[in-house]
Amino acid sequence: MASLTVDQMYELDNGLIADAVKLRFFPLSIARGEGCRVYDVEDRAYLDFTAGWALANTGYSNERVKQAVIEQLNRTTFAGLISSMHEPALKLADKLTQLVPGEFHKKVWFGLSGSDASETVGRLLPLATGKRRLVSFIGGYHGATSASMAMSAHIAMTQFIGGGHVVKVPYPHPYRCPFGDEVSDCAEKAIRFLEDYIFKTICPPDDVAGIIVEAIQSDGGDIVPPANFLPLLEELCRRHKIHLVVDEVKVGMGRTGQMFAFQHAGITPDVVILGKSLGGGLPLSAVIARQEILDVGFALFTTTGNALSCTAGLATVEAIEQDGLVAQAGRVGAYLHQKLRQLQDRHALIGDVRGLGMIQGVELVRDRTTKEPAAVETAKVAYRAFELGLLVFYVGMFSNILEITPPLIMTEAEVDEGVAILDQALADVAAGRVGDEHIARFAGW
Ligand code: PMP
Image 1 (spheres, rainbow, N blue to C red):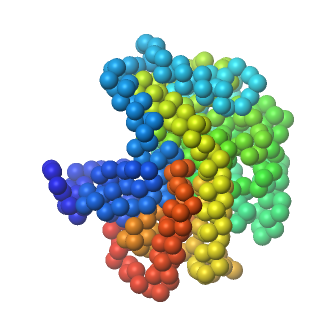
Image 2 (image 1 turned 90 degrees about the vertical axis):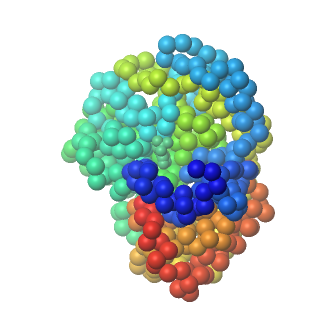
Image 3 (image 1 turned 135 degrees about the vertical axis):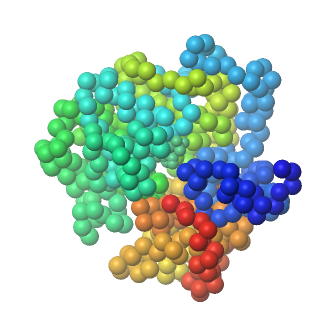
């Protein structure tokens, strides 16, 4: 199958690869990647504002990660954790327990995806506590295995069966507060609703093993909750002796300008879930939690904590630390935010720009007063940006938020380049220059 064109590849993909695995926005094929750019099979270059769904925090083909993986591959292609021990797992576990805050005995569970990690937490917490229920937030995305889907409450997941023991409650969304137009106390209202209504009706708190939350709800729409939300949630958990689980799969590992997004709120979770960027491109997830939560039950796969993935993970953490990527994400992210705000001044389609560091959401609406979601326009902007050489995906319960999660190594100059393309794409869509036929082939969410 050498030297296929992109069109030929998509034709073959159509006949060979399951649609269930696809979330496509434009005809991208990746032949190679370098820094913040990927190149397709016809050698077209794309600046990447997605980092492959917030995965390539250290960029594509990061030298440290690449070298570490090559050296480990030369030692052995496989070393497992479930029935043997190896150094990369120990070193990475030691590192992660130091990075995650909390003055208590922590342990690390390793998996391969954010989904298996969430599912494991959902299974072990009830075993460890003897309590049966979990609470999660509407709009949350915790995975695509049956159990992690059942913990999620993104509209893409709630169509599937399961999850009767997981109670879903509103997430405080400053732009679309579920409790009405007054947004200044949106977080207080969300906490009060959970404590005064949910806990007193369908979900007795003494039967709740844990509350799982994203510090920034990303697939739900890049929603940055009010600053007091996580501290209030932590207090509520402590009052009722409920474990606080923070899913940092997408926003952790430096993306927001702190190693973990929850650190902006100064809270100490009992459980932290990592994935995506942790493996630097290789499949790797981790749960860092109080020891008593992880020493129960059965949650292992043959390739769990394999030496190659752990080596990549360790090199990724070292690259983030030694190359100063957390600070860079904070600095360049603030610059990116300001540039996107300037776009909002010029484009009526942009209703809101929000984010923290290198995760920014640009919400498109048909009318800034009614906030009617502009889903078709959003799909067209993503498509047009692709034609112009920029990768950007969209998220949200109404599929109308352009999500910008670049590699943390991105520079201000690259931000300028990407924002200029977005500017052009927005203008082209507003002027009706992008036809419906372009997006008809791509279902998106
Ligand atoms: N948690 C969060 C917050 C996520 O964004 C995702 C993926 N979008 C997951 C968990 C699941 O990760 P994966 O797709 O690697 O299984």
